[in-house]
Length: 325
Image (cartoon, rainbow, N blue to C red; front, side, top):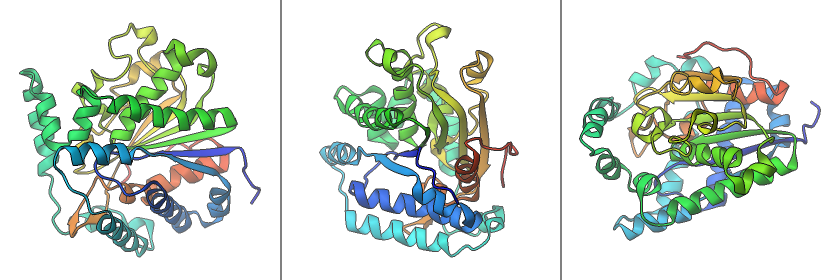
């Protein structure tokens, strides 16, 4: 296959404690590559030739969480991530990523997603949304409404890496997970509208934005996104061609698992070509229990493999059903 040297993939990880940058990048790309190798082996060589990087802010998050009294065992975390990846690698057929396999996972529960669906609107109505978010994710709460410079530093990490890729030219795929989707959105808005960056980057486009387990469908989080209070002309990013959103069943981080409806005005104003939503089953098991938000489980999933393989092959992701089971 012809080498594709003008393509770049940028990963942006999510919330919670993270191992060091290189090990996290290695295991993330190993999972992404394993999915493509399983379903589209002819595209593996091209994937290997793509320029890849990660916008890493795990050190910032680790410091924040440790300052709040939490503790982290990096070697245990890496070992468990590798165990999850090895288990997922053993699934040889894409059709084995369905509901039957998901229902057989240990510790599977929809309770956290149910609570998010029910409690968030009620607590939001009485102004208790941020305490709820903080109780689940102190780093997410700090990013959205904290008094420190944590959010500024996270955005800077993402912005620096994304601008570096845009400066390289060619096709860019942005893959964000969890809280990384919020930071990614804010940076895309900055490059589109902030006077500090707009003149240089307003005409630079991200070819494909792939959001995994994104909380962007939550109304209370959307209200805190950059541009949310702007007039319609400046409300949304203008630098994404295609947006693909993958949400796992029972992943409470994306309890509102569709984004096409929430960002419909982006399409109406022709700011994005399409926003596609896909529902999947994330088969990752972390520490002996089902973890539908696991990045490893998202990266290796057949739907993600198809999106990446289509982008490698043509630069355009082919039409696909709204939901993939």
